[in-house]
Amino acid sequence: MKLFAGYGVNAMEFILATADAMLVDADSQTPSSVGLTFQVDSHEDLCAYWSSPEPLERPRRRDLGKLNSSYGYKLISNPDDFLAFLRAIATNLLGPNWTEAELIFDNILRFTKTSLVDIMALAD
Image (tube, rainbow, N blue to C red; front, side, top):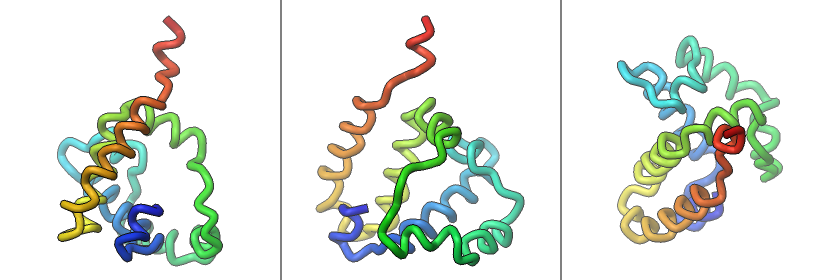
């Protein structure tokens, strides 16, 4: 979020871009693991959820917290899908600033990927 803020993208813009990308992914012929994790019935349902005051209270306080653990586990179980999803959102949000931010963003993704622990691999 700090990287986006440095380019004038606020938390709400990021949330809306992510929600839209999740909806498009979930509705596609071949949804990624991200789209399958966050399938919703309709765009209207998604808008209704984000229009209520509760989900927006934490971003208003700049308290972004952590993902629900069940969603978090599903996302990191296929890190390539998740990181590609984030990269696509960043590319779209930053537009012409993407060229400047790309190296920083890729370093953040590389660090994120190397710090993920494959829980299923630990069972072997």
